[in-house]
Amino acid sequence: MDATTPLNENVSTPSWADLFFGIITNPINTLKELDALYESAPVYTLAQQAFNVVFLTALLLGMARFNPEESFLSLFEILSVITNEMVVWVVAASLLSLLSTILSNARPTRWKKALVLTGWSFTPIIFFAPLMCFKNALGVWVFPIATIPTWWTLLLLFTSYKIALDVRASKLLVVALIMPPLLFLVYMFWTGLSLMVLLSEIISAFQN
Amino acid sequence: MSTEKKKDWIVWLIIGLCALSIPVGIMGKQNKPKTETDSSTTDSGWGITFKDRIKVISLNGMISDTDEKSVFSLSDSSIASTIKKIRKAAENNKIKAVLLRINSPGGTVATSQEINQAVTALKEKKPVFATMGDIAASGGYYVACATDKIYANPGTLTGSIGVILNGMNFKGLADKLGVQPQVIKSGLFKDIASPYRPMTDEERKILQGLIDDSYDQFVHAVADGRKMKVEDVKKIADGRIYSGRQAKANGLVDALGSYQDALQDLQATCKKKYGLTEDLPVEDKSSSSILESLFDTSSATSMFQHMGGSAQQSIEETVIERIMPVSMQAKYYKQPLWLME
Image (cartoon, rainbow over all chains, first blue to last red; front, side):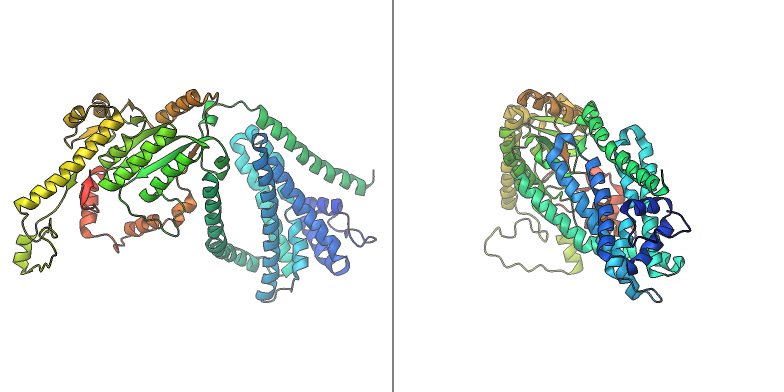
């Protein structure tokens, strides 16, 4: 995808590979195109493409953790990684949609559109798979290298929020700094804690 | 090749390479030789639940039948929980051996006996080793002596085989302050050991009998656990504390060594007993994560105390904490009436 030209004027929806290439090489314009495409292209196709990205990255990440000595547990872990990433995606999209209603001067963003934009932001997670597979060879360098796809993903998420909401970066940055600790506290208190208690009960039951 | 095709080709190459790295990584995991360090690595993750393993159970602090677990406490290291863990370990076939990590100055007689009994029952089913931390005295030793083998560091404080009942007579002080205790009792000895009057000879005799009987139970438990003669135990059970090295010399512990030494020995015992070629994984949930530390109310209390808060800490406790060695502090406050320490 070129920085100056639109995705493809003749086709209503660009191909998945085209968008993937664009998000890697020219993320801002690609996200802007996706934002604009939502009005004209079929929503289902766009959402399906975003789903494919999230699913593929989660699947590769889960498979990278596969341990042949614990195949049953590893399969369970793959499922949990996929579920986890899907939940994060939905939460990120919901948050974007919510912010569009509570932030002043923000452009209204429908949940489906938020799903499309945030879904593509997960693309850099695909690079975790080779990182995890070669972590022994990389040694301690795996930690600084692993921060690259993490920051990349966060930056893409930030960009997708900025484009969708059409607000100043500084304003969004303030929200980004306040919202995560706030949400973290709420999440930890209600979901995380209850989940841990539930897990410990399940483990305790298994141990008996 | 057109630009579009070139883009497609690059995208599928990236995805292909990422996907290809997975089987390479899996093969790498398979071919990675298992080192001694790997096999003895402790694991607190839940994945270990389904494996044959060695379980580490910690016994920390005063031994008494109180459950101080809070809603926010993710790791439960209370004594009540320790007894439960020992009983569960006996029933769980996946747990092949238990390493008991003891760091306790002692506690109440009944609870020490309860843990001793639970360890004895566990020992009949699977190997149980004890490893002593800073202190494993009195009630702590009562528990340790029930295990198959005891490891102590040379500087560990142990022994203190005996029973004590502490009390104070405040009569003089109460008289000075003009305080008159009013006691209505159903029987002659209902206010035995009352701090508001001197102890009578008859009361002293009753309490001494109680202490002697508990002491006798303690000595017999040590003799049974350590396969020693009661007379031999009595010779060293005059209430004194021993260093780990002294305890090794008089037969109260089997070997001098650290937690790791005890673990390695237990691994060797398991290999022999179960015919294993590799070390068993170790389940050690004694260390708390940052998250646990954040949500542990005891940590929070400690934090408040360090910040100058004094809601639950008396001046006496603060003074004792500052002037006395840590190993001696438990002797002087927060102690139940009837102790093994």
